[in-house]
Image (cartoon, rainbow, N blue to C red; front, side, top):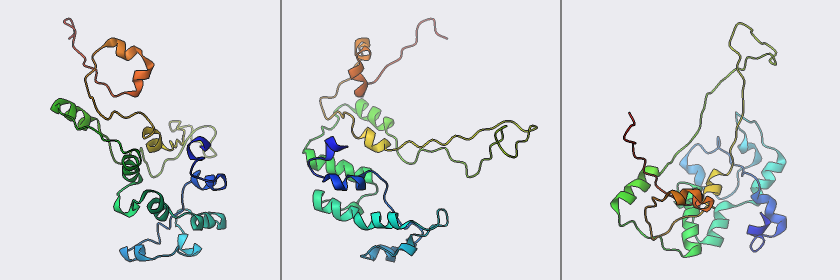
Length: 199
C-alpha cells in the first residue's frame, strides 16, 4: 500500500483507505435525503440487520468525504457515475492520457463484447441450517451439511491493476504463446478444432 500511495497520501491517513466506508442505507429512503449537505446523526445509521454503529465507525464516516475527495483530486463527480468502477475507469483515462484504439476487425469486436461480464456475482440463499456432528441439534436421520463463508475482496481493484491492451490488436494462434507465463496477462483467443476421429 505504501508504495502506491506514499507520493499523495500522508501515512497517518492511510488507515482511512484500508477499510470500507459507512453508509446509512435505511435512512436513505427518498431522493430528498440526497439533497442534505451534512452527515446524518449517528442514530440515522441504525440498521435492522446490524443495529447501531459504533462511535468509532461514525468518526470514520466524519473523516471521509468520497465525493469531495474525487472532485478535488480528479475533477470528476462520483454522482455522475453508476459505480465506483466506472468512475475509476474515467480517472485512469484522465490520469494516464492514454488513447485506446477502436477495433477495426468486427470479429475481434464481437469476441471482446461476448467476453464482457457485469452485474452481481453471488451464490445466495437466505437461510441455510448446517447439520453435522459438531452442531448442537445434529439430526443423524438427515444428510450431513456444512457451512462455509467465503468473501473475496477487491476483485475490481485487482482486475483493474492488470495489463490492458490498448491497441495493435491481433489474433494469436501459436502454441508457443501459451507456454510463456507472461502471456497469461494478455487477452488471447484459442481456436479448438475437432480432430478427424472425434465423435
